[in-house]
Image (cartoon, rainbow, N blue to C red; front, top):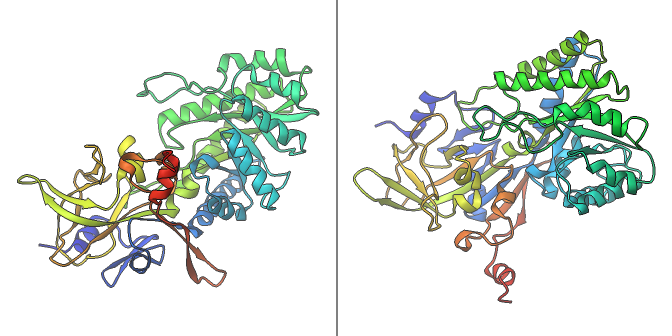
Length: 463
């Protein structure tokens, strides 16, 4: 029987940019994971902060190259979707790269205010305010506009939203408008519930905005839930959107930008293949061609990259507590955590992440299922994105196996209810940050200890 290392070597191009094995142990972006486990134990959340800057710089370089190659006349602006991961260490790292921000709720604006107070953003930073807005969100956006954040752009999501700004914003301001994109053909609904219908856009601008509003329409926005993919659906929706931009631009000369929401995908498998440069070039070329055909200026392009910015910085690490053979062929590795509470996309969306053992790479391998600690029958992981089966090293007597799910840095904490009450009172794990100084030397620090019973008892009203 072959070793687990042989299985990976013959199945994938390995090692990769992110993963390598030295002395029978897995390294993640050069981080010695076993050393961290020995110091902090498991379960464990880990964020490798330099990956955030690396991905931002890669995307900015790709679009800059595409713009230069196609001789595109507009500019490119990178925005980070705070909803992907709101933690301060993520925003601090991302903002080192001269980026801008997209928000989704009133409490996002509190984050914006905190970042401004700390000098991490200025009043020139673009704040793209998306979403269907409750009164408190409208109020917070208005506060920014009245405070002189000149590039704060409320994105109108319905025909009534502008009324609030007209009444409460004290001076002229800029804004955008979101169009209601069609959903994927296999989705339950035909059109997104968010945004303004395509058929309403021109009439609404002419009858409600042009020469009648304090707000100038600067941006047209749309969002594709499935992200930027080389599919007929994506190119069709992008073209439809740009044609509407060209139509609106002819009657709205101040319109100058498009926001193509829905970002680049992340690596969810060692078998991941995606041509980022090709996709950026095709986006630029499509927008350029449609604008030229309609004799309008090419718009400045904004993107909102959330998962792409932060997901690949994250890892969630466990140990195997026990092996259970429940019938003739179903072998379970019971882990010291839960998918439902720690990585809810596995349970809720059947999402696949890169899963690799951290030690025992020279052991033989066999098919297993991984079981979480909660009582829910859905708390398991049984296959990888690239194959229909899950293989891990055989655990010999007196051995403990550690394994990790990688590229889990987006959405998992917010969806899992970080710091709150989770299924079966499974605590949030310890969270470690890995940083790198200017000389390339790595260091770690604890962002949060494992959630305590005292914290839970207080939330539940027992204290």
